[in-house]
Structures are given as C-alpha cells and as structure tokens.
Image (tube, rainbow, N blue to C red; front, top):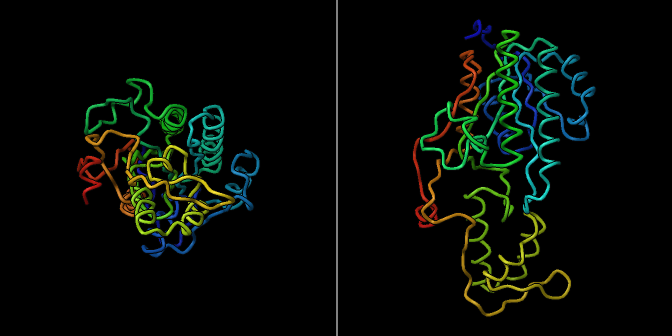
Length: 294
C-alpha cells in the first residue's frame, strides 16, 4: 500500500480524459454534482490524445491534481482492426499515465474493462483472475490489461497512487448502439426499437436511426424483415421481425449504470483509495432472456 494521498478539495483541478464517452461524461456529471469547480476536459480538436508531446504539455501546463483516464478507442464492429485497437489504446494509456507521473499528479484512476479477464472466468470475478488467461476482449482487453499493469508498476516504483478501476458491463447515456460491437443493453434496445418501427410501418424513420447510431448490418436487416431499397430507403420483406443477439439467451451479465460507476470513482478519489485494482459492479447477475423480458 502506498502512502495515503492528500484528500481533494472542491477547487482542486480534475482532468477527465475521454469526457465525451459514456463513462467520461458520467464522471464529469458526478464531479459537477459534488461541487467541483475546476474540471479539465479537452475534445479531439483541442488535444490529439495520441500525440505524446501534446498530452505531456497539457498536463504539465494545467497541473491537474487528479486524473481520470477514461479515453479509449473501441474495436470496430467486425473486430478486424486489432492492430489499430492495440496501438491506439496503448498509446493513449501510456501518454496519460506517464504524463501524470512526470507532472506529479496526486492521484490517478485508469478505467479498465471486464474484458481484461479470461473468457469463462468464474463469477463473481476476483481481481486475482487477471492474467490467468488470455483477455476475453482480444486486443482491446490486452491493451486495457497492460494499462492496469502500467499503473501497478508506477505505483510500486514511484509510490504514486495510480489505481485501476475495472467495471463490469456498463450501460448509460452516450453508449454505443453498434449492433455488432456494442454491449448487451444498447444492442437489445436498438433491435427492439427497429422491430417496433417495422411493425408500425414507420420505415421512413430507419435512415435517421442508421445515421445516428451506425450502419445496420445486412444479417440484422434480414432478421428484422427489412431490405435496402433505392437511395437510403428501406423496404419491408414481409417477414416477422426477430430479435437475435450475438450472445446466448442464458448468458449472465453484471450490469452497472454509468452514473453509478462514476459515483463510485469519485468516492474512491475522495477517500484516497490506493489499492492497485478494484472491480466495480452491481453484484447482480441477469441473463439476456431476463433482460429482454423486462
């Protein structure tokens, strides 16, 4: 255990990297609710988070006392870009964690993912299960696991409280509704919404859904009783819409709302939590069949 860091005050500067993502946005809301007045955020135009020099200069100049590393690059829906996913996530993590070390940040939390654990890990998963097998999430999980290891190494070598928070299956505002690469809750909700549009003959609304949430894969279109028409139009094939998810109906998920996760993260910051790693979830397992029935 490292020496307990000094506890934050409401005017301490807190850097939330990745504030436009689901978890990052929830962290900003949680901090604002607690009354923090100096929350540092940067969008992609203001900061190239893949550029080491830019990240180092920002942290050195702004001197945040606390950092939440929620920035990431998600896999593509077809999973065919493992090199990009691994390289970009490693680069982002390295830039933020080492930059925070160089600037003597008081406390840092790296937001990992449950994909760092091997497939088939016994629920509830213990932190000790990390590195007991290949990460279930492939290149994305490997990158996140490396971030966990980097935080642990910096804490051990330099005595800095750089902790890793590993949430279970997160859902909430600003989630990805990618029908192949998304998480269970948004994938289920989007398919139910599309099926409702088909049954209600509201096909004119589907192009707007695709523009906002991403392309609907052809196999999903077929199951929904849809086909592409001229231009951006869709036509009904007459088949009854069916909801088919890329997971087994009896597969279990520990779902945690993004704002609940953010509240836990801010609580840990305010307590000066300094253990290497912590799993965060609801401790309630729900199957996809149960979720769909709700």
